[in-house]
Image (tube, rainbow over all chains, first blue to last red; front, side):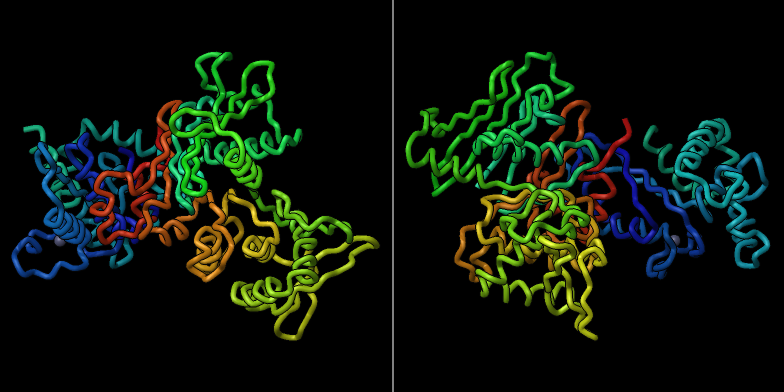
Length: 176
Length: 342
Ligand SMILES: [Zn+2]
């Protein structure tokens, strides 16, 4: 299924319904959710400890929304529970495309974003050569970079251990 | 009212069943047959009324995806009039004028009073694809008071209401002031000898704004709210892209006005209900119908086929719409009714 949201606020408001819809889709085995992190704090394993308030971390928000929806739904008839993998691109999906091109990962972005020495606006310029890429160009680059990154999974995972790493770990467990 | 339409090789609808309610909002990607539905209603009214300009020919109606050029083009309507089920079938065969047959649900042909009733009902269906230029266009002073498909003739309809139906005219003005609070009265202009057009009076300063200077949304809103006051009301109205040109804040007024057409009892009106089929792409409008999933139909392209299903028919619909707005869940594509990459 080709699922979309038109903005980050729309993504969060649709997520509960999207998970519910996929849960009841007998053809679906798993749901992969990927969102840009933008300027929110990046997920941290400390958020996993019980009672830790992680209200603004996007990873935790997604996980919580899905958990809550899952608890409210009837189990899938004759099917295993829907698997869910969450990817959060820090600060945006274009940062993943630069693996193998620029030596910039989550740690660098985390340090560079607030000080302004690694501005978010540079991302689009670097990837698309323009700050106003067309949808067509964005799609073309996404496909091209996805193909290129297939052979660079280890590098991608070590540059983005949280946002990409957790998703990759989860998806590997589906195959195992 | 029409309970369902079965389309066979009709335009974009090769083999599709459309379920209908007294009010139906139809959503779907471009090319999913929403306009074909409204064209079907026009074609049927044309056949029943024997009006040559509305009688489309078989070649133009035959679905491009029909298996061969000799395939039947057919519309099969399940109607319920005065609690009686009626099957109305319209067929376009080669080198013959289109034929209409009316049957009881047991297959027996219908004659007499019930047949007249059905034909009269089907002949009074009207489809609108409102165009602000046409709405603003002057009409001859002696023009008949009727609203054309593009909205032309609105000034004649309003003038007739003012002169001959003062109660309706007053109610319409009252409703117009709610929809368009910057205006307080509808005036009539003579832009050239023998012609009349509407103008609106501003509440502040009482300026006269001629139709040609009114905004697109104002003209469309005026035509839409007039639907409730037509002196000879249609049996069904089809409305193409109903939100076009309207400010999102007007959509709630629009919903009220459309509900008054299809559920006149709710507002204390004593006229017969007017069935409504409206197409839209507006997520805001869709959200207004989240409590009535039986009133929303999603059209979805599946290869060459189009499937049309009510939200209420989606398995576990109530469970799926948990805390998310219906519009966002629809936009995501998880319900269908959005364009999907081949
Ligand atoms: Zn977190």
